[in-house]
Image (cartoon, rainbow, N blue to C red; front, side, top):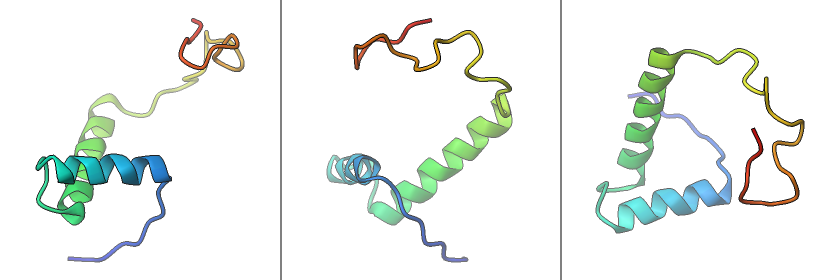
Length: 70
């Protein structure tokens, strides 16, 4: 199997580590492989979104970190 090296944001690494700690996956390698495969299948199903920002405010927020504006 080919090996790939990636760099991910710390928050994603923490989420992967938590999934492994909870027993969702045996190890990080299995977690990353399964999550990547799931993402690719979802992408193939829905396809790329055109103009995904259309209809949203430019910054997507109105001064609130947890509230999106549509």
